Amino acid sequence: MPLKIRLSRGGAKKRPFYRVVVADSRMPRDGRFIERLGVFDPLKAKDSAERVVLDAEKAKEWIAKGAQPTDRVARLLDGLGVLTREAQSNPKKALPKKKAQERAAASAAAAEKAAAAAAPEA
Image (cartoon, helix red, strand yellow):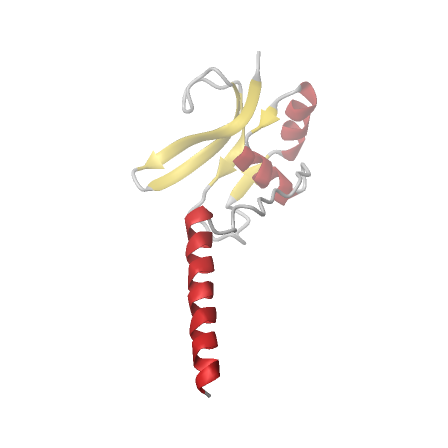
């Protein structure tokens, strides 16, 4: 049975509130779960102690049993010091795409041509 430690959404419309649960990955997001580990309230201030309330010992036990935390839960566990996750970086994401690079090259060539045309006149 593939287990996940994930968020189960509760709360009203536009007012999310999440439970951190251990569930079978084949179950619906807000469906049946095995154990509730804590809560996450994204509307609280980031430095608030009540933003993430989690039983760290239970989380460690479930991870030792093979439960895989989702990306968001892994970030929460990392913030609490329960789990260490590698920082992810995508250096190519910030680079301009192909068309933008072509436009930049064309504008640079035009600026260079204009500078060359202005230089002999002076």
